[in-house]
Structures are given as structure tokens and as C-alpha cells.
Image (cartoon, rainbow over all chains, first blue to last red; front, top):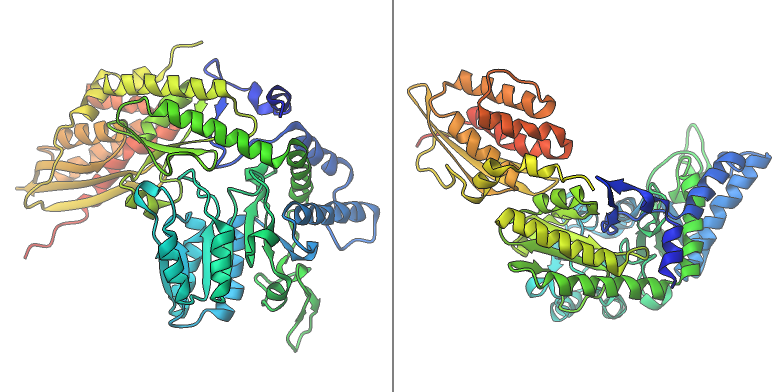
Length: 407
Length: 145
């Protein structure tokens, strides 16, 4: 992986903050876009844009081609058996809500259990809590071990043996720098006949993902975290599950036959779940991002991000009163930490004045951060365009921050 | 490289308050209480007031917040002592305007420094949170047994 060549492809790196180079370490919130994705979107708008699946005219044909090409591209990226198992949504959050409102309402009944983990992002927590309240189901949580070092696998086995209706869990959490053993967990779940839903927002585009190898039933991801545009994500689901699910949103495109006086007949997936005009130009941009990531190499991207996170963790440990959440050795490109005596919001503000973009707050995981005893923490998250020099600069800025506030 | 502007904002007076906060701690027998939190960054404060004879006799806060929110809580709890409820509301409105627009008259030096936050839109909510909590507390008398 030639980092100089990669950085040349990201225009945002030319930006300055108070005369400082911009160091973007907020990739777990969203990633930046390479030139070719930006150009693809503008080219699409210039010469290929129209609504999809509707017009018998040139531009509609081109737009439909681009949109369906994105579906094929993503199916291949996830090694899904068929592009028809890819449903485009607005993002991971909508994908979770889709399954909760369709499969969930069909299968989860009063007294049933939904199993989650204590490390879920609000997006994979609140839709299930809402469903449970509505139907009278129970939610159980697989605990995290001390300091968020790992998921408690023994507890997971015990809870799965009680045969919950669904086990929804995150692959790579956005705070802890760890990777959950999805394959093992899905295998254990399958033995008990438990349906599995994976929140892969933080892992697709950051490492190789193969849904058939993982053995899950549903998987959700977002384009914007993998160099693609915001406003589009996807749900992958096994064909037999998707085919048996009722629609999520109702409207154009998702219906086969509509009447005044009798119930409509809906289309087969994926159309059944894509009511209205979909995110067309976003799909064209996302497909380009997927081609870009594939060309760079997913394994290389993963190794690069983890190496930087480990380098960062090592440097951070030299700062007194700094606590890093998660395992000793990083399993993803994420490092979240709290600094004794300095509030995370002050850290992020001070860092920004020096060109360093960090995330501060609860990272949309309020119950987890509360459990870890730190309502607010700082987070650095790395991706393919970050460098060792940027990690060094971050450590320097954080040392300066500590000196200023503790002074 | 330009000199970081945050030093002005966090000048000694604010930093001093956040390191050694005044009026910080629980209050026995408050007459008015409220909790404020900033869902975006994780500031959480609890405010307690004791109003006696139509005036604020005491004001204290607890919680976990950033330097600006903590300093704002210190300065505010000091500033409201001795004021009537109407005067408290007036001061809260005046400060919120100052923090958002930088415009304000007849304002103490300390509040003026705090008002410097208007140059940093993303920090305005940190400075304003205690004052919004104050307004909520004034409307929230503790029910006496």
C-alpha cells in the first residue's frame, strides 16, 4: 500500500486549520472521499441521471444501470450469493429499523427474548428496545468484560442456549478497538436456531467481509464509513428470510399490482423494500468507492489502520492519567480514551485549534460509556489515508493539551 | 502558524474555575432543583437553589462537565446569589444573548469573559447549559414533605 499515492487521491487533505495541516482522526464517525468517488458522482449527474426502473429513455436506462451495478458491486464485496439479497437503505440505522419493523414484528412475540450486547451503538439498541416495548418482548444483553476488553463469550453461550428469537450484535464497535468473533457467535446461535443480525457499519470497507463465511442471517452497513457518499447504506439478508418479510415503507416501486378496492400485491425483494425514489447518485458513488477499496486491498487497509491504532495506544500510555478502553492490543483502527482532569470536549476543542479532528462525547453508546465509568471520552479512529506522522502529531497535541489544562 | 485562539477563551480565570470550582457540591434542603445535560458532548450538571424571603440565598452545582461549562456554572451560581426570581430570569436571558451574539450591556467582567464563547459556535451550548438549567430550576420547586 503506497500511502503517498493514496493521500494524493484525497482532496480534503489540502485543507488547513489555523495554518495547520488537517489531521482527520474521526473516521469512525465518517470517512473522507477520494477524488474518483467525487468525480464519479459529478459525471453521473452530468450525463447519466434520471429516475431508475421507470423511464423508457436513455438517461433512465443509464441511471438504472448504475444503480443496479452498485447492487452487484456490493453483493460481490460482501460475497453475497445474489445481488437480490442486497437492499439499499438510507444507512445502517434504517437497515436495523427495517428488520425490526418487518421480520421483528412478524417473529417476536410477547414474552420472547431479543439478545443484544452491552456494546451496541444506539442504532442497534433503540430500534430493538422500541420493538420489545411494543410487542411485550424482553431484551437481554451479553455483558462486556472489565474495561470493555472483550465480549463475555461464556455469558453469550449461556444466553444463546436460552434460545432468544434474535441475536443482534455489532461486529466492530465504534469505541472499544475490538472485533467481535462474529463467525463463532453466529455458529453458536445457529445451533440454537437463533436468527442473527450483524451491525457491520464499522467493519465493511475496513476489512474483508464474507457473509457466507460469517454465517449470519442479516448484515447492515453504511456507505459513508467506507469512502462513499452519505445517505445510502444496505441491508443484506438471506433470500428466504427477505422473501417472507412484509414491506417496510409503502409507495412507488415496491408494488406489483395496486387497486382501489383490494389489497395491493407487493414485489419480490429487493424492490419490496425500496419504496420511493432510491438514493441513485449515492449508489453510483458508493459503487466507485467499493472499486477503489478493492483496488487498494481490504487486508492492507485493515492492517494499516490497526498498526496506527496500536502506535497511538502506545504513545497515549505515556500520558499520565490517561485510560484507554478496550483490549491491550488493538483489533480495529479505533482508540477511545479518557484523560483524568480534562473533559473530552475540551480535548477535542483544543485539538481542533491545532488541526486535529478527534471525536468527543459518548459516541452514541451512552449505556456502554456509563458502564465504563466515563460519560464522555475522546476517540481517535484511523483509516487508509492516515500516517505514522499524524499519530506522532496527535500525541504531541494531547501532551500540550494536558499541560495546558493541568498546568 | 497562527497563535491558537483558544488560550484567550480559556484564559486563566476560566481555567482556574474549572480546576477549583466554587459552589460545587451537594446542597441540603434546596427549594429548587434541576438537571441539565448536553447529549452531544456529555456535559451533565445538577443545580440546586435555596430561595428564602424572595431572594436566592444559596446556589450550588454538581456533575461532570467541560472547562467552559464548569466555569459558567461557578460564575452563574455566584452571580445569582441575592437576586429575586425576576432578576434571575433577566440575568439568564441577558447571558444567553451575550453567549450567542456577543452583545450585552451592564455585564460583570467575569460574565463578559465567559461571553467570549460566542466566537466558538460549537462551544456556546457548553456555556449556556448551566443557565438553561437555572431557568428550569426556577420553575421546579421542591415539594416539601
